[in-house]
Length: 293
Image (cartoon, rainbow, N blue to C red):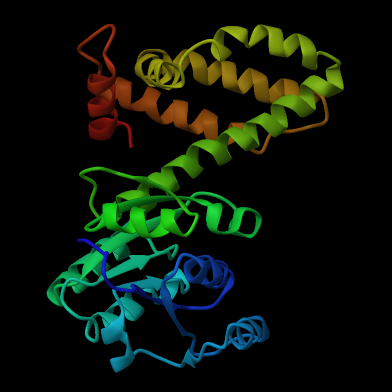
């Protein structure tokens, strides 16, 4: 959709930290900006007064002028807001859902929008909005992602699109990234506390060099491929590691869950043995999804 020849109107629904951070960058980019908040905070009222912009209290006919609606409400009301605004929007307009709603909710939101012939972009905020403001990386999927990227980049935003992705995919990937990074964070805390207490932290880094030099994808896929072969033995190693941390006066809160993961796979292997001695990543994941959950 070409935007040349007219001044685009962006409606911001929700004036919390996320919504407020985009108001001035959008105005500087030359867009018309409309604001909506049922219960505006003092910060929202101050911002609106500073910019001489009215605050609408809810969805209404005023949304017919919007080319884009940015939904910046809480995840709990994401779908309700989509249902409210879509009915007022003109055909071909678009909703960008910045909320933390689940992937399933965002997929349903896209279906609701489509019934009103409105496009829907699933937006996942991939960083600290208070730190990076409008420069916070955004991961997006759905219908209209290229147009959204153009709108945001003109306002100083940073957008990565998931080509061929459907609404819900951006939030799914954000959650999966958190599974990885937060799990690694918890393990890193226990690992480095123990290494520091023993005075071997610098030596530990030397022992991890082979991992550091392995591409991340290769490393995590290797873990999964070999997990379905060596789960029982590794469960014993995890148990030994827990004993060592306990002896240091730092019992692990992470490793009990790790040990149970290995035991679960080991029990599944007894009931449903692998037919291959060295499965590839597809075979390993297929077996885990069928037997190891």
